[in-house]
Image (cartoon, rainbow, N blue to C red; front, side, top):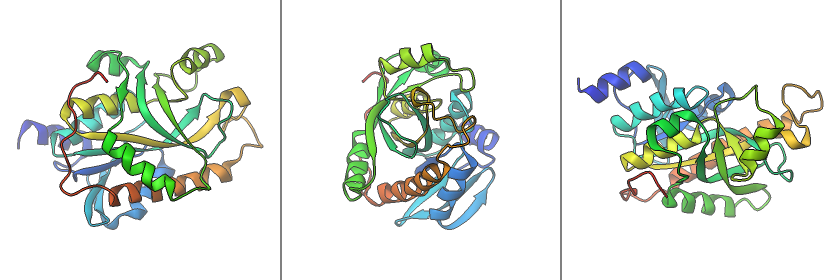
Length: 250
């Protein structure tokens, strides 16, 4: 086995992934993405199948940039060319509602993992994937979505109003994985995009863990929408895939 295959075996439980990789975090999103695969097969900690005639893997990154860094690094080392983060984010704009879709046009690294690996510059999403998702969303006029920068941060349960105010000066949403995914993919010459559902809006008092009135139905419907959107993005990919820009800075 090569070094890259040994890394993948350690991180993913298998030595190979498909050229297109879906990267969920939550169990709910992982289950939905597995369902869009044709003939899914479990390989180690991953699932492999096909979508729109292309081989696709589903790899749960775990929560946070340190966990995502290991999984994404392993995938890129064994042939991944398209990385689609599909899961949830927090809304930093008061107009956002639970269940809205956020397309991360660029990632803003407030997390220490991305800064150690690639520096603190904003990292853009793949233009190829942004074009693909724009076409998908144009066919869904009733869907509420936002194109925004996404701040990637190190903490979930200890976020404060002051932190949110700082992040909101540079981003419209917040998560814990996108920056490291974009940075590693860009360094490897792969395409990356995060398409997420808003799961909470702190400024509006929408907390999935602290409010009995939380609109869980809207969030679960957004999970279904995201799985369909991810599949449709794959269907819009050109064949063969063009090379992605390399480097870290936008």
